Image (tube, rainbow, N blue to C red; front, side, top):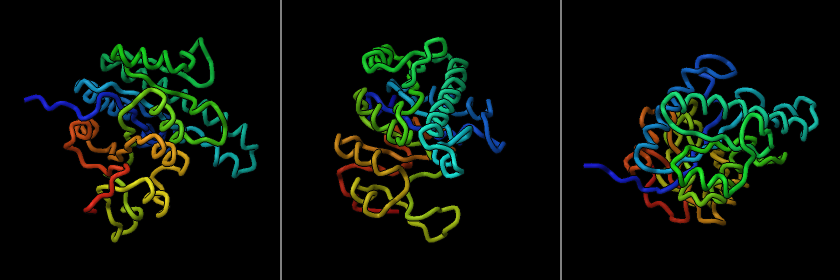
Length: 246
């Protein structure tokens, strides 16, 4: 019996570091292909999928500024890094037979389409995967904030953040054996406890527009499809207070 997805349209936030694979930086085509497999499986459920990808595997604006670069220039470089990653993921998705469009907040029409909300919605309505590149197009905003913004703009039912662990923890579970995993959190929980799953601007934007945020592991094959069907392991961030954590 086919399990219907819980969401009609979602935006998936993927970090640039997810593309590194066994290396220290750059794009590993095998990792891009593995992520594309998961996205293809999720698209097969009937859910319309948009993606925002980070650029930290190539260049991170905040890190550049910390080393003495002017922040606006550093952020612009980080935005361009996300375009490189978007093109890599587009290529991987095309290899899985998925029709995909890259829309950039910084116009570069010989490479990809300029971002326009109506164009993005039209692509999603036609069943295409849409990758939003170049963040918000403005400095000082993270790709997490860009993900929340694009999700709200395009009428997504939820924002799914793909990470290296299966949800939100009170501390890094890789270094703290006493870290507590949360099944549910409110937006206010995340802000007050300073849980660094997303920056405050992204959480506030999601809260103000009642956009649920689901945090799940990108390392689990089929994890995205499972979350869409309501059977996957994840932390749900919403207005509803969770009764159980663990």
